[in-house]
Length: 601
Image (tube, rainbow, N blue to C red; front, side):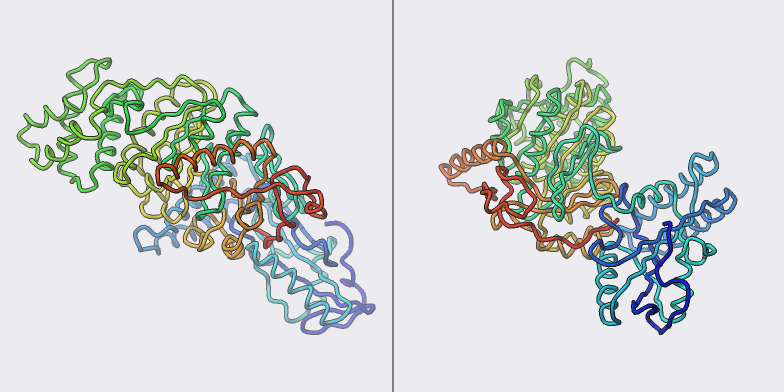
């Protein structure tokens, strides 16, 4: 930063904590460690605009030789740390592996000269009218930046020379500098940006502390998949519905598929002119053995069928699955692709197989004669529309993972061959994440669905449900964007995976709920960016959503069932809107949202 740091030169008095000159007290804060991740652009101002603070950022480029040496040293440190992690399933293993791969990519980019490595110094000079006033301001600034993940050098002696270090004309101090890539420099510059305005994006909500609109375009990211987590009553379903309503309005060619175990989202699909299907009835007749869903890949279909049986029969053994595996291979080998086998064909083949354990036949017999007998037919489901919802609310809890996986497999086949953008919304996604085998299939979809122009949106109450297996943890890591609403534990168990700071965890424990204030708040994480967001809707959006929900509530109450939550977003008057910086006529009500802790850069 150009210009002189006041009081850094000339005569003055120095104590252990500050430097005084001309009746003004000053002290420096030098960054010792940057946050693990820094988003592009910077999330919020580095420093405080309401405090007399000078922000100093100095930068110099490293030669290729020095850059390569620094990168190799860092990679050696990561490999040593990875070798020291002994507990199986420790979430740090995935993070360290990703970091090691990122360092290897950086090394290749340095060799090809497609990027540079820099040394950067970031510091602040705080001024005060008295020692007490100075210390109050230092603590305020330090607390804000500590929440963001910054750490500082301890300043005890020789404050005057340290202030001189922050002037542009002084020698660059390598011992106080930090290595930064081109992307890291871009993330810090400009220092005062705080916005999300992605090209062709749709309105996500308003910045919860500044009131500025946030525009997000899921299909512009490396991964097109996202998740929404929040406790009961936090507004998960409302947030999801607003998002895909706006996405469809922005892009009418979007194909939308909704898997809804609770039956609330399908009413919105129906209200918007979409098609809905009731799972567990003849409306959803899908042959689980049809390889059409995997594009004719018989091995991929066999693995999917094994995952389906594991979801349907949690007690099924590896030995029994191995018998099904070999039997399916024989069935597929002896039939043309246009005449796939049925469940009854599989059962008949197992009856003739001496290796088939008797218990396996006992497990499969009810599939042919019980509530799943309608699946023992060729596939008769034809998804020709642009908006389709599957209502799974009539299923028994024990059948839920199986039907979710079955429909997921079928819809994935649709996504593979449909042109244009596609979005698959899965409510109560923990049913899939906690089911062995199925979690691996879902992880595969999250990683590969973008190749077909598609994305997933997973909705669940607790992100901790995705920590049970390596596959479910991989799902979290491969989601480019995550919206965290109110969580009882603030998301502490997943904080290392999602890169949440302690301040963000504490804030998520007390974010605003729609039932108490008329709007809900959350933390939106996209790539390395973190934004505190307030969910807003127009009058028309609010009317469509609430009418669809009330219709579903009447249906449920007439059947003796209840719904998990009811949206309580309310209209606001011009009087209530005064001073909030938000426009009247939206469904963003109540007083101005409390300012969350400044979140991480």
